[in-house]
Length: 107
Image (cartoon, rainbow, N blue to C red; front, side, top):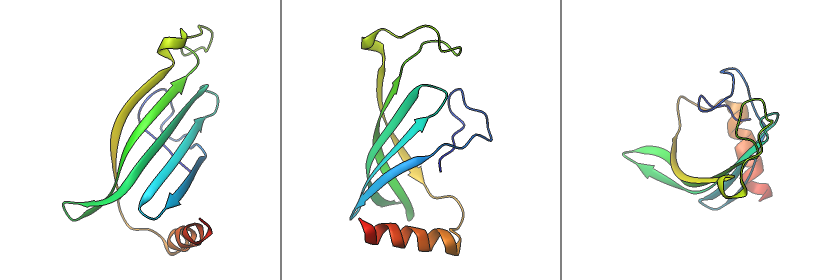
């Protein structure tokens, strides 16, 4: 699950995230259901200043220009590209650690 404080989402909205692991490489996609957009991150696990981090590049695609989803974007304005650092906040629960280990084994 993924939540964000960026964009047109409500603070308590949570979206489904799908991803893959390959050693220290990570891929993650979030479909912003109801917002007609999608973000995909591709990155690498690193330690920066003694903190665990995912260093990623991202592609964001959206279909509409307005918040009512009525004005279709020009095809040249659909895609946006950038980079992000994700740092861990707090501690993982035992269940989260077990889930990560299970998923890592599957991939």
